[in-house]
Length: 63
Length: 327
Image (cartoon, rainbow over all chains, first blue to last red; front, side, top):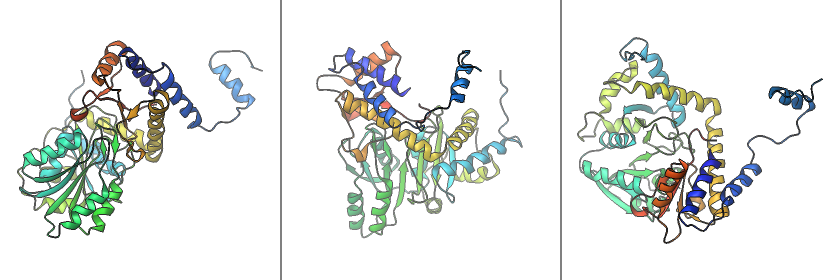
């Protein structure tokens, strides 16, 4: 939602002649959000990879 | 078709009593009383004034945006005598000025101090804790009335700890509901002041609520869908945790500020970071551009609702709201 709103605002500003670069605001927000990830970054286990693949219907990685 | 529920039924208090109790956790008070009106925040403004003050009472307030302006306007129209201190739009309430004015008021003629916690029109958050400290330092007994319409449940607010006497709020922001439920938090001091307040009141008279609410009922038809909605909102808030919600709002707000300041190289109406709001950002458009045009194009072409610049800042900015159920 947050990035969607920024994207729409960016397009509207560009449309009315404000001198901004499309994607610049969204990118700045993305960088900040990635750097302040609410979830701890960690390496996932092999078992979790298998489960994730299976849950979207892929047979890859199944034993 | 859904049958209208009987709000006089013996089962109805199961809902309402839990709302009165659990809302206190969001207001952060144990001894305060919460009242709910079928109204917007504007109605709750009126309830706050008429239930605690008397005709001709002198009060102190600060005008630094459209909503603090409207509340000040209401004070005068209802018969109070407001001392209005104009602060540049983009700044918040200066606690040192609160202290200076109250310290000079040796006769203690000022009966109340009104503060808008989060000025929605400019994206400015004032420091209520500092305002309370200024009042205490001046040893002044005035009531402290705070508008938290766009802050309660989204930005840290502590009714009891900051000794706020009357808290005004509404359902359409941090409670994530449609507009229509005015929320009022009253301290014990405010409840005592109520007994001496002589302003005319009827629909917003707390006396009728005081007689009915303890048993779980209302003096007139309550907005049932909003009450059920509030129940669900409170469940969601407690499930996530208030402190986690504040942190999440700060993170999303900061991402918007990064976008404005680092990406677009534009400016916020809130000049100093100490005033930055975690629920709404007001973005100044460059000279020669009408902010209303940005809003209209966003709405018509991209199905995006941005907030308008109001009154003194009309056309000069647009606003992005980042509060409530947002990811």
